Image (tube, rainbow, N blue to C red; front, side, top):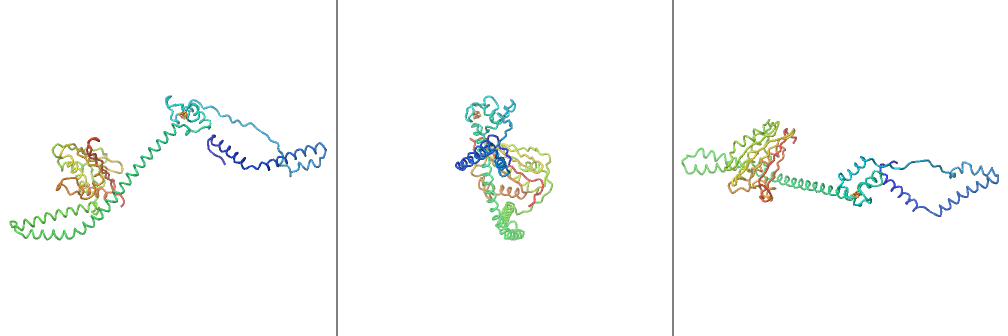
Length: 390
Ligand code: SF4
């Protein structure tokens, strides 16, 4: 069996083997054996002197041939050469000693200087890990990497919990919306018929108009809930994402004190998307951004970018931001931080549903704490360029 272990380890293995053999050796048996071999050689000498050629030959017969204790030795140079300057520099570099100042010469490795340790490594008598500062640095790196992996795992776990929560909310919303949809349709139909038959100047007409308006509002809410629950169909067609961003900005004039502009860093702006639904997504995000800047003014940027497989919208505002404790709730239906009557709380839920229907991803980063830096919110929507298998 061959091994690629360093010389240092191989020597240690041989010593260990020898120690084990010695520990298991029966010294009395060994002495008896040695006595026997010694006697055999004496017998041979005696028989030779006595001229007992017959017995002498018998003792040299094949039966005793294994007892020839003669040994031969040949030269096998085990001398290890010294490393060249470049080899030494390379070993020192692996030890993290690039400059003269890095060579601490602390002696913790058992060698007086870093260079002596490097020479011993070259000869296979020492290992890099024997350098204490090096090992500490490696451990520090490992801890840092573990820390990053742990944070990523925690984030992924949190995202999974959140998406499961939203999925079960979507199921509930879809169930309610389907149940409400049919009776609501009947209410709307009869309200419209009655409205058509009623004279416009009567008191009844005003009441019926109110019923029709409110029932229409309910119908929109139900449609939004179905969007959130991903129950509506996606009609994919070649869509220019730059046009969507520009059109959404044109359709929503910014409030006083707010500036808005678009930037396009995308080479191929066309992707297979449901144009109406994605327009609704960008409009919802711009509308939310304006609401966040209404009081104090600010700037809105809508950017488009992409690569070979995905397109991206980034809607960034410098508004009041979303408090950290609310960030995980923003996609929940009916969650809103706007004042009563200012929003249904379905805008981001619908946005989330549409993005998920496109098998895309939506991320929100926000800071509402002015002491921690500039406040504002950035929403990134990433969508696949081509339809994804369901
Ligand atoms: S432990 Fe490291 S820093 Fe200290 S002398 Fe050995 S090689 Fe140099």
